[in-house]
Length: 313
Ligand SMILES: [Zn+2]
Image (tube, rainbow, N blue to C red; front, side):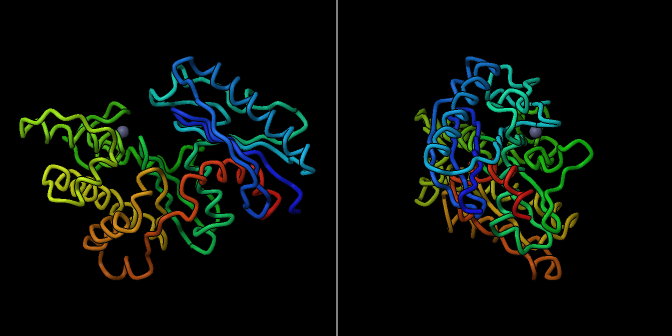
């Protein structure tokens, strides 16, 4: 079994990460290439296809048996096709990822939303494996999610279940990338945190530009009320959205992934403190919030899990 590998391709707005993963979830090799998202959907797919071909050739050269290719990307993906995307990749909506990514028709290919793919890895090898109901939430440039019930990633009617980033938190909240107001993503994505912090700085008459959300997180660890208020507001929005999800799903595990989860244990504790304060004991006693053990490798592992799952389970 260990000589079998799958190729996992994680297509993001700035980089395409690809790697070779064994059936036991070991990442053998990884590499990153620029997405060049401004060139548009068809050239991004062509670049991903070329990358995939090289990874498969590498696997064969090193004596592994490539069994398939999995690919994950942001946006709403249904039937192998991008049916709704944010503006991260130009002309991404409408792209047939399933047909475009395949370099060899003899290989099995599966594509899905990137966070749903992550949930497949968590349910196969990670913390969702033992959970009766797990929610995976990825906090990055945007917010993505997926739900695992009894080891199965929830698909919904059209394969679109779990888009937690657009769960409404507040009717008059900030404008979201989806066009609505007050979604979770409009409070706790990297983009939203920078925007909210920048607004607070401007209100204090300060003009400094924040490089990214980590600059806000770092400032919030010191005596900087604008940063503390921004992070607190994001954590409160997280707690509100997840209070709704906990009442709906009664999960025993919430798994944090995405770039913001690199803020680590203090961030996890902050989110848990806010969420736990809003839940009655009978909803929280079997619930835990954890950080994904794979950090930034989860995207590649998830994509590979899409095809490895049928062989392992
Ligand atoms: Zn939204």
